[in-house]
Structures are given as structure tokens and as C-alpha cells.
Length: 370
Image (cartoon, rainbow, N blue to C red; front, top):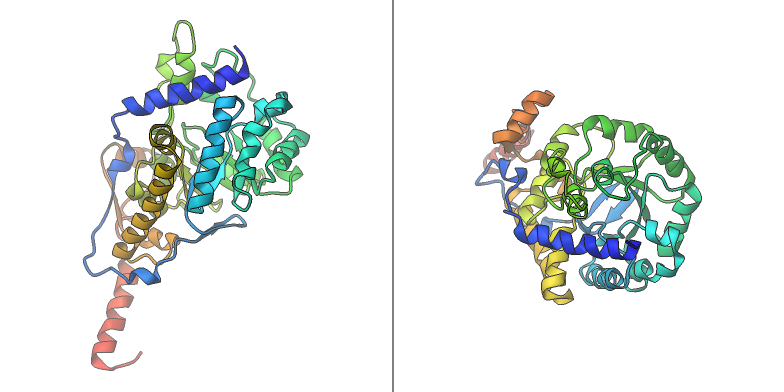
């Protein structure tokens, strides 16, 4: 099977998976405590976010998907158009196909040619040489570089890697050898706290947790096997919500992706510490079913609804959502207990802020000063 056929298979199987998905995941076990007088004025809300030397006008991005075949080149062109029209960042799919066969370069470079002024991320695997990492960046004139780590995908992949011990050293070399911020991301199985701390020590600028709940690449690769004999890997790893909780108080900035279904999931992710939130499968489904205008409308609506949620919750910036009280339920709460994560403080973190606000209001009403 050629690389182009494999890329087309990935898109086909991913779409089948998303259309059959129940829609439920562990984001449903995260809820906001409602404070009826916490709201602010909509003009005071800004969606701008910054992290790891990166500044975006919104905390939402189109995450890594595809490239490497004629069909996926058309998808990348349309995704780039949607990113340009909605003003969000975008990442390419794995550029390994281009590094092996430069004739498919145009299936990736459309991300830049159709989005000349946008924030574009190149994407490579952890076995890539520093020179090839620079080639990928140069092709897209990329503003950042994603390195994806995907042992649970490679393992059932018929032609996948079976040697992973060099990845740590190679990530460190790439982070030191390129001139753009390096983001290490999973592909749907999650990054643990220990992994994020390791990445911080390797010189990586940002970690994309990319947890379970969205596209399951172990399932996709098993579907490409003649006997489909790796079904026991379906659902492997931690959910995005679990990864966010596991990474509490880690200094390295984290992004959230994997299973993000709506603006409430975006707000939940930001409240749990993500600096921005990526979407792949959900946006791809809209594009494939309804076209570019529908995807632009979806992204624009999500940003408007996120701002509405922030207004109701009293968060002037995405970072302010980390001061909102959240409750953790069900199996996600069990995960936190086993990992030694104190969820009670998440449910009470607005107390000091509300106390100060109440004092200020009382002083305003009485005319007194502090």
C-alpha cells in the first residue's frame, strides 16, 4: 500500500468512527459551579491567549489532520481557507510523506499558500532528523513545529515503527536545533504528568495533551489489519480531561485536544488549565459533510459562544477561567483520587476572588474606602 493510499484510508476510517461515535466522553464529568452574580459585560471579554512565546487572537485551533495525497491536499486547502476566514491557527498532518517523497509537497504547502498570514504549525514524527524538521518548517514557513508521539498508533499499524527508545533524545535535539517553538503532542492517547515534566526538561516549549475521546488511531490502524487482531488497544490511554487534571500546576504550558465537541468543552478545557484547545475530527466532519462555508460558520459560532460562556462565568480572558469553580464527577473523580489530585480545591478556587469583589461592592454602596 502506498503512503497516499494510507492517508486516504485514515480520513475514511476517521469519518466512519466519528459518525458512529456516541458523543459521550469524560468532559461530561466536568461541570462549572454556577454563581448567579458572577457575570460581566461582553465588551470586557477578550479571547486572546499567549503561551510559550506564542500569541493567538483566540484559544481555538484546527489541529493536525492530513496531507500526502491528492484528496488530502484538497482537504488541507479547504482547512487553510477556513482557518484564514475564521482567524484561528492551524496545524498540518504528519509531513513524513513529504520528507520521503517531495513530489507531494503541494498537499501540505497549500496550508500556507491559502492562509498566507495565519499561524501555521508543521508536524513531524519523533524519528525525524533535525535537518528534515527544518525542511518541514521551511516548506510551510511554519510559525511552530509539532512533534507527534504515537506509540499506541504505531503498534497496530502494519508498517509502523517498533523502536521507540530514541524518541526522547531525538525530541531534545529537534527542540534545540530549530528556530521556532516546539510543541509535542499525542495523537489521541494522552500525555501523563510524568511525560509533560520530561518534555519540559527536554526544552520543549508546549505540550498538546491530545487525550482519548476523539479519533482513536489505534482503532483506525487495527481496521487496516487483515485480522483486526489488536482490538484490545481500542480506547487506550487517558482522556483529555484526565490529562488536564494530571498536569495541574506543571510549569510547561499545555494545550488540550481530543474529544472536544462544543464550546462548553473548550471552556472546560481552559478552566482545567489549557492555554488553547484544538479540534480535528469534529471540524473535519463538518468540512466533509457541508463544505468550507459551514466550517467557517461553525468556528465563528464556537468563538462567539465561548465568549458568551466567559461573560456568564465572569472570565475576562481565557486564563481567568482557571479561577472558576469546577466539579469533577464519576470515573474522572476516581482517576483523580488514584493519581493523588485534590479536586476539592478546584471547586473552591473562586472564594477569595468573590470575597474581594463583595468587599469592593459593600464599600461602593457605603461610600467607605479601604
